Image (tube, rainbow, N blue to C red; front, side, top):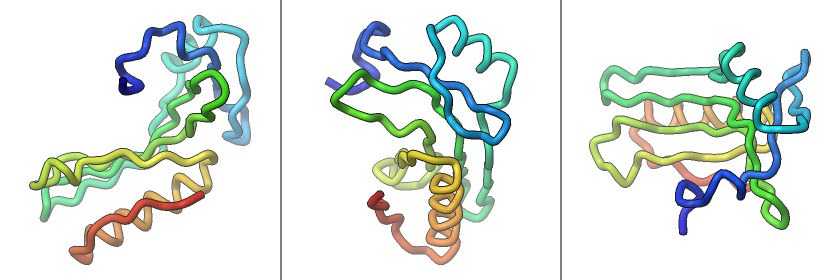
Amino acid sequence: MTSRDRSPEAWDRFYVLDERNEPREVADRREWSRWMEENDPVFRRTVLEASGSTVTTRFRGVSEAAPVDTPLFITRVAGMADPAENRSYGARSLQAALAQHERIVQALLHGERVRKDRE
């Protein structure tokens, strides 16, 4: 079962970002949903015209209930010629996600395969 197949009840923890872009848990899904509508969760988007791909780093803001601690920031590679290279990479902080974004962009610019980071 993938995370997309799970029911909404499985996503028990919701987060928004404070003024320093630090995740803060909120009481319920309605507060999270309202925050997501009023704020742009995308922090960086890089379009690589030569390959037709895009790298996007965004705040996800949802986490599975314990014992799994789902990363709240996601960097997604899309538009690659090889569909297997269209992947998502998680990070636990904005700083880690932005550094990961830059490593992925640089790897793609140099024709390298993107490696999975270990946090």
